[in-house]
Every structure is written in structure tokens, then in C-alpha cells.
Length: 83
Image 1 (cartoon, helix red, strand yellow):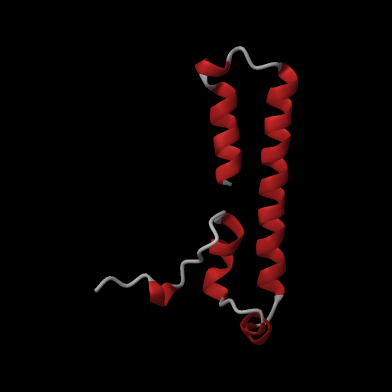
Image 2 (cartoon, rainbow, N blue to C red; image 1 turned 180 degrees about the vertical axis):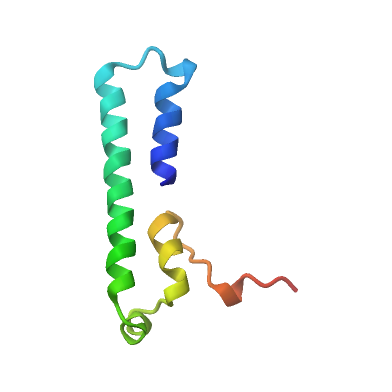
């Protein structure tokens, strides 16, 4: 979802008026594909049972984080506590 918002912001930005139509279409298409891929990841992981998720090293609460976060570090619920 963030990719789509970023692409729309980039396309509508006054600073990018000199962008060609082809570049704008490519950005929008790339954002669409990324969003579609993220949704597919959420759907596919959500179909797995808890035992299968545990086998691949994730919990059900991490599915959204894994699908929509582009960083390599996952945010686990129990790791977010502050001392």
C-alpha cells in the first residue's frame, strides 16, 4: 500500500512536471505490481496453519509486517518492548 501512495504522490508532485508520460505510467505500473504482490503474500501466508507458519519461522502476527515492510528486520511483538 505504501508503494501505491508513494507512486501517486510522485506522479502528482509539481516538481515532476517534466516527467514523460512513459515514466509516469511505468511508476504507476510498478506500484500496482508491488501492491498486488504484497496482497498475494498476505493472502497466501494467511492460508497457512500456525504449525506451518512456525516451521518457516514466522507467527501469524508478523504476516502484515513481512508483506508490507521492505526492511530486512522483522518487528516481532515481543521484541518491541522498551526497557
